[in-house]
Length: 201
Image 1: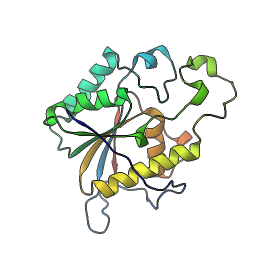
Image 2: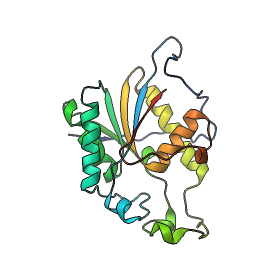
Image 3: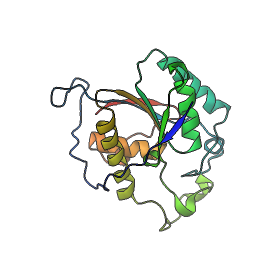
C-alpha cells in the first residue's frame, strides 16, 4: 500500500469558506456532493495512558488495531473512491487497516489532518494539566479551524461526487465538524477512537 503526501497551498481561512450546513439529500449546482467518512484513529498506547499526544506519531495498541478492523469489516462493501489520512503514524496505521478490502489503494497523507499542536503540554499526563494555564505555544483555535476549512475545500475540489474516507484525530475532527455544522467546538461531542461520522460536502 503506497502513501502519497499531499501539500495543500490554500490560503489560510478564518471564515467558514461559505460552507452551508448540509442535509443528506442536498445537492450543489445539480451535482451530488462529496461524501466524507470522517474517522478518528484507533486507540493508542498513549490514549490508554492518558498522555496528551498532540502531533507526536503515536502507536496503536491492540485495542486500537481491533477497533480499526471492526471499521474495516463494517465498511468492506462500501464503495470508497479515495483514502486520506493525517500524516501521523497512528492515523496512517488505522487507515491502512480500514482500506485492506479495497484493493491496496494509495493513501493520500496530509498535515491538514494532524491533531492540534499542544506545544509544551505535549507528552504530559492529562490529569496533571487540569487548571494549569495554557502555554503560548499551543496551536491557536483560529489556526486549527483554518486547517479544517482548507481540508474541506481540498476535498470538495479534489474529489467531487466521490466517497472519501479520511482518518484524523479527536480535536481536528471536531474542528472540521464545527465548520461543517456552523457550531462552536465546545457544543460538539468529541469522537471516540475509530468512530465514523458521515458528512456530505
